[in-house]
Image (cartoon, rainbow, N blue to C red; front, top):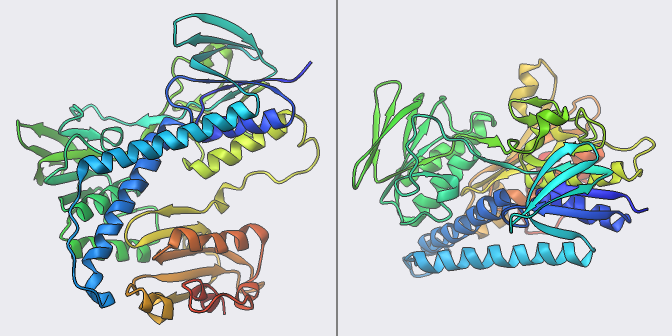
Length: 453
């Protein structure tokens, strides 16, 4: 009998687990109540990057005079943008659905609940309930925006991220609460669209978990755009009128605008899955997992946001693949586990920000000796050709061995360039390996070899 593999949640983790298990010969059922491909992925991540790309195109036009062109002012067609985003979402959902069906995965529109380690109750969209047997159960139900008690979210003037891709109308003045990755991306995109923006920063720098030097570049860019920064302020109340909103902060300051957007984290979708009754251990709603993404109950795994690990689509997909391989016996012997500290991440602001591996601040905080080398893009011929010399490449290495431990990039195409450092970190390459690589000239990637030299 084929291995019965049941997945609850069809995001990057769930659909990758399903297709991998199917290729390995399993009989796979995937249950999704919302959108195949993942609500967080297709309704958050992809629309945000599409909006950022539009804002980036508008910024490029504003900088046209620096390229020897007549200045052209772009105007946003909000409905055309909405249509574009919907088209991208539909194409990607169709692509994921087609891939799953081509692998023989049984797709069920509905919701799932764990009865025990070998049985899942599935309630279809038609309300009909059935119980299916499972040799492996994968939980990948994702997360949703966190809404504090003081925030009267209405989807019109007080928005969560799910309400803002795009929002019902273009804000004339958007107040963004939260200066993490999602918050700063929204600041970038809406300031590019022409909205006035105020960012409420609870700490003393934006991106509090990132390199202060990286955050400083972004703050300078925001200030240059006219963004107002409320540093050291924590939102604690929102007042709404017919045509405006006010956000009250704990230090007495008040931010006033037309709309407010909450970017203050997410909470896992672990309710209604029957996990507590099944004996699955939870930590603040997240499923506790080991290095194989296995829960405390045999045969039950968790991946993606629900696992409480890095909330990145790339990480979720890798977890899904590793789960399928482990459940079907491919990892019976020694193998490489996921090293979350070596996951590359990017922030799609302008300029882009990307990093991987050990951060300079963390190394110094731990008293660890490292070698830090930095090359500004102002020294790059390609950056000057592109008329955008902002940012830098920073590489962290072991001074004794030369092994690359991490790096940060701020500038054009940082999200693409970081892949080179990510490979070096994962493979244990040395700075000499990068310095001796023959990169294209002129190219932004040359800054990588220069920083490694």
